[in-house]
Amino acid sequence: MNFGGTFYYLGKINLLIVFFSIINLLYCYYFDFKINLEIYFYTFIVSISFYLITFKIKFKKKNFRTNNLILFSITGWILLPLIMSLPFWLGGYANLLNSYFETVSGITSFGASIFSNKINLLDPPILLWRSSTQVIGSIYFIMTIILVFGNRAINIYPLKFITKKKDTVYFSLNFSKVFNNVVYAYIIIFLISLFFLNFTDLRMLDKFNLSLTIISTGGFQSSDLILSNFDQIIVSLLLIFSSLNIFLILGILKINNSYTYEEDKSFLASLIFFIVILFIFSNDLSLSEILVQLTSAISNSGINFSNNYNSNITFILITASFFGGCLISSTAGFKISRVLIIFNKIYFELLKLLTPSAVINSTIYKSGEKIEFKDFYSSSLLLLLYILLFVAFSFVLTLENISFENSFLTSILLTFNTLPSTMYMSESIDFNLFSELAKILTILMLILSKVTPISLLALIKYRYIK
Image 1 (cartoon, one colour):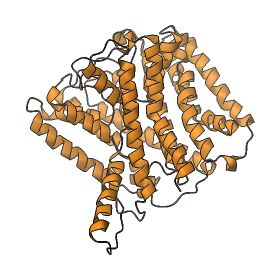
Image 2: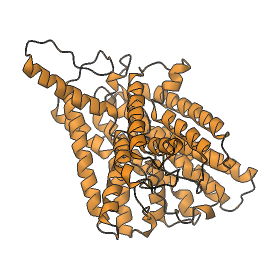
Image 3: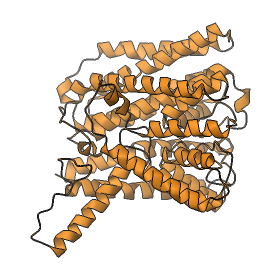
């Protein structure tokens, strides 16, 4: 294992924590929030030190191979939240365990908060820091998708079906380019989100924090938001935009044109299908409420912006959460591309049985890449691993005083990093009331749901599937 290389690249991503530390320091000075000002300075010192140490790390970049890639993808979900939990802990907002829980929940875009009952008592700087954890997690997630699991040597994320050209498989050669493009995309999407949220009646701080939540498709709220019908439509459109391929905006601006966008069309078609189904089964909801609930579900955000609970549409919303957004987005669903791979492969295998002499070119999105058995195997095995993870967390929730229905729904939603809000159940889950053991197990499940099923699949594929 190349541990030096792993910490080298994590140190580069740690530059994002340096940036948000500076943002929080400037915010505190500008708005005269001198209480707990030093906690962001301490976090800045720790993060900038980590970044500077990377210049001293020496390793052979070309030797950063498959096992090292998987180590990089796992270590980041453990180490980055540890650094970002410092303001919560040093500022006295929570103990170390609760601080780490809050940060992991943000970085994985889950959105469950230990501050759910006292969110309005938190000061603006810590709310801003809390929202920034989602963005850093989203950028890191996109990086691992493209550089690790979309890497042709591993090929767990089926990016080959939406990629226009073959990039070099060397992680080290692609890292800087991908990192810069992802950051550019998030900056542009953030500015677009903030611009359109200015047409709403929300406070400026809420607009800023909600923009960070939307672009990362996370589940954190800075306050109990009350949205008008017009506000709900604005938020819905922004959530749809954030669920598309994040490089779509770079493609439009001719900054990066490495991907096709046929997948985005499939996603929008599935979105329209869900809208029609919801419209049929939810006569008591307005169109704006249908849109905001559906887009919150399919983007794996899970925030209940409409403050309504309708048991008739719970299954539809959970199904939308299962599909999630496009491959290169911060959404955490199973992805419609994998569903298409499974059904496409089954269909063509049946067709071959009926007409053995037929020449069949099985693919998706009009790609020149064929769907191979290992693509079908990877998608099917990943689905099985998600089911096993769901069953495991259901067992964890039996340790707490939660009804069977709520534990069932919560475990499904956690598997896809979706906030178990009142959009899915009659009452939300208060994770602050969990025992310490349950919180630790929930942290492990959040990390497992984000990376380990895919990492385990990568190891199985790398060792046994050629």
